[in-house]
Amino acid sequence: MSLDAVRNGVREIDEQIIDLITERQRLAAQIARLKQENSLPIRDEAQRRVVLDRVFTYAVESRIDPVAVRRVFEILIEMNEERQRECSGDGNLP
Image 1 (cartoon, rainbow, N blue to C red):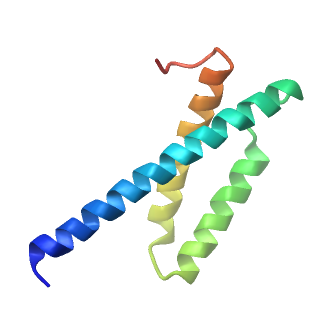
Image 2 (image 1 turned 30 degrees about the vertical axis):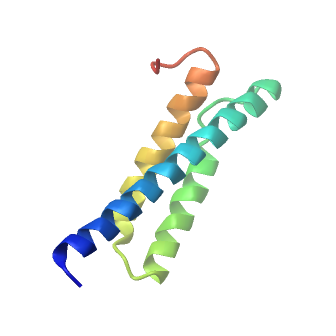
C-alpha cells in the first residue's frame, strides 16, 4: 500500500470522526432541552466523571493512551456544554 493510500485512509477516518462529533453536538442540543425542561444545570460533574472514567477504561482495554483519550473527551465535553449553553441562549456560538 502506498503512502498516499494510507493518508487517504486517515483522511476518511478524520471525516468520520468529524461526523461523529457533529452527531454528538446534535445530541447535546437535545440534552439542553431536557435539562431546561427539568431545571437542571448544564454542567453535571457526576456525569462528566462517568464519561471520563468510561473512556479511560475503554482506552486501556483498546491499548491506546488513556491519558490522551481522556484529554480528547474533556474537549468534547466542553464542546457539548458550550452547545448546551448556546441552545439555552447563554453561549458564545453563532
